[in-house]
Amino acid sequence: MLDLAFIRENPEAVKEGLGRRFRETAVIDEILALDVRRRQLLTEVESLKAERNRVSKEIGQQKDAVLRQEKIESMREVGEQIKQLDDEVRGVDAALNELLAGIPNLPQADVPLGRDDSENKVLRTIGEIPQYPFAPKPHWELGTELAIIDFDRGVKITGSRFYVLNGAGARLQRALISFMLDLHARQGYEERYTPFVVRGATLYASGQLPKFIDNLYHDVEDDVWLLPTAEVALTGIHADEVFDESQLPIRYTAYTPCFRREKMSAGRDVRGIKRGHQFDKVEMYAYTRPEDSEAELLKMLQDAIETCELLGLTYRVVELCTGDLSFGAKRGFDVEVWAPGCGEWLEVSSVSNVGDFQARRANIKYTQAESGRKLFPHTLNGSGLGMPRVMIAVLETYQQEDGSIRVPDVLQSWMGGLKEIR
Image (cartoon, rainbow, N blue to C red):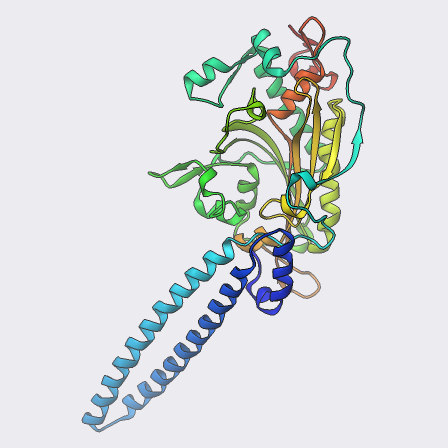
C-alpha cells in the first residue's frame, strides 16, 4: 500500500507513476478529497471534545442547579454531534482505505515503459535452442504415452484443468521440489513449511485482497482462503512484528501447492499441464533494509537462474515493462525456459522488488540501529521455480527418439538413481 502522506505531499509524482502503468489517475483526486474531509472532521471532533471537557469541569464546579442542568443538556447535544462525526469519520476511513488498497505500487523510474508483456525487454538468452534428429513431441503426448500424466482421471476426480501424475511422473515432480528447496538452502534461504489456507487479513497484507478476489478459492464457513502462492504466507508470517536491523536480511524458501480460479479459454495456450487451478511452486522471499533491496533483487534473480542452469535448461531473462509488473512490484524480472515440444518460452520465475508496499499493509517494521526509528523493510519474492512449467521443460528437453525421457543428472539422486523414464 502506498503511504497516504506520500500521496498527499507528492500527488503529481503518484499520478505520473500510475500513468506509466497505464492506470487511471482520477482516484488520486478522490483520495485527496477524502483525506481533506477526514482531517476536517477530526478537527471538528477534537474541538467538540475539548469543549465537552471544559464544560464538564464547569459542571462539577457549578453550584446553581438550574445552570448545571442547562450545561448538562447542552453537553448531551455535543455528545450526539461527536457521535455523528465519529460515524462519519469511520465511513470516510473505510472509503479511503478501500481506494488506497486498490492502488498498485509505483514503478521505479528505470523500469522500461510498456503496456503489456509484448513490450517486455529480453536482456539475455543462455543456451542454444535444442536441436533433435526427430520431431520433438509436446509433453501432453510424452506424458500420455509414458502413462506418467493422466488427464482423464484428473478431470474425473475434480474437473477441467486438473490431472494426475503417475509413478515416475509424480516422483519427478517431487524430485524437482526437493532439489529446489535444498539448492535454496545452500543459497542462504531458510526453509519454512506454512499452512496452505490463510485468513483474509493475510491475503490483504500481501496485496492479493481485494484486487484478486475473483481468482481466489474461499471457504465461506470457516472464512479461510486457499493459498494462491507461498508469498502470501511468507508475508503474513511476520505481520505486526518489529525486527532489529541486525536481523536483516531475512530470507525464506517454502514449497506449497497454489490454488487459483483463473478463467481459462480453450486453445493452444492451455493445452496439457501449462495452466491449471492447482499447481506446485517453490518460493523465495526476503526482507531487507530499503537501501539493500536492489542488490537483493539481483541476488534472487541469480538464484532462480542457477536453478535453470543446474537443470540444463535453455533460458532467457526478461525485464518487465511498467504495464506488466505485478500489482505490488516496483521492479521485476521473468525467467523463461524453452520448451522444445511446445515450441515456446515458458515463464518459470517472476522475481519482484515490492519495496515497502507489503510491509506497510502487514504492519511489519524494523528498528534502525543508528536512529532508533521504526521503519518499514522492503520485501522481495520470486518463484524458485514454479511447476508445472519446469516439468514441461524437463520432459520436452530431455526426450529421446524412442519416446523415453532422460532424467537430468542433478535429479537422479532424488529419483532413486533412475536415469530414464520409459
